[in-house]
Image 1 (cartoon, rainbow, N blue to C red):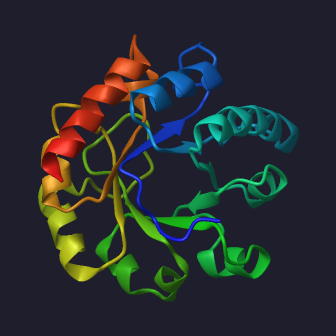
Image 2: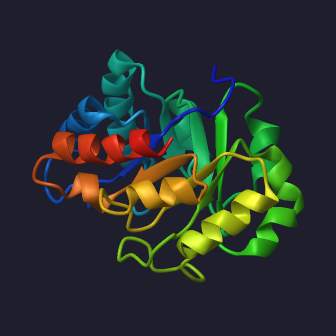
Image 3: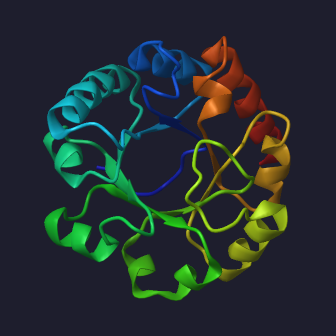
Length: 211
């Protein structure tokens, strides 16, 4: 059971992002480098395939005490006893998730435009994903890039923990944290790195400098 959101470096992992390398092995290297929360995102797998890789990933993460979040698939999250679920603007509503999965898990919600901060779904969430901070090829179905000013604006409007995602890497991590993010979510800069452990450690170092 997770009482509050306290993570700083959040890895979003998928088989595609790992570029042919084993997803579990890449994630383990990232955890050794400082990742303290992992989300698995597999939009195109059927239930059986998604459940299989998620179970493997969770078994490894449990050894390190790192929570696992499932992206937009409540059935997989429940079947694998994940620590939480993350949904976006076009996914299952947080209120509906709460009806099926009660207290004791993390529920993340992506914020793609300012008006979302004032809808009724926010009350059911544990943290907000600010998506994307900078333009990225990983996720192309978003409204606009927030930028550093956007993070600061959202920080002034909510007390919810903010997870910044979208082309985050070691060279901008410090500035994003200082702008108001509580945690950084990273995809390509870690999953696609030649040395995921080193890449994670470099970003984690910038986070620690900023807080």
